[in-house]
Image (cartoon, rainbow, N blue to C red; front, side, top):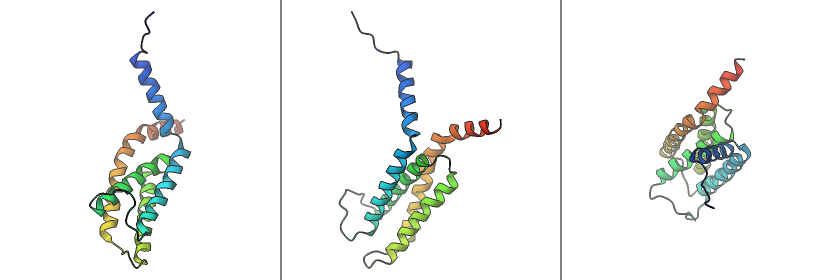
Length: 144
């Protein structure tokens, strides 16, 4: 007897449902956000050389870190507007820069803050794609 493979439509529906469940599981994303923030604070305040590979440009590291923070923040709190996510992530970046200004081996940098802003702006792009339908459906439900 030959085994038949599942219908492609059924497999795609299963994968779509699984992905939606993972994207909607807020405790996972909140945990990842906390771990990410802790790692970024450590890397931003340590006097040791970075224990992990990083890009040749410090600004690229900032863009990547804040892009990731923005996406994960949006997944952790999808009910918050993008404005509040942006404000929170950029406040975190400003807090890091102020902390670095107090360390003898670090300094405050407006260019770092600009790179954080670029990463945050880029991080908002996939969020609009991922959450656009969810926000519309929520608004439609609130009309009734």
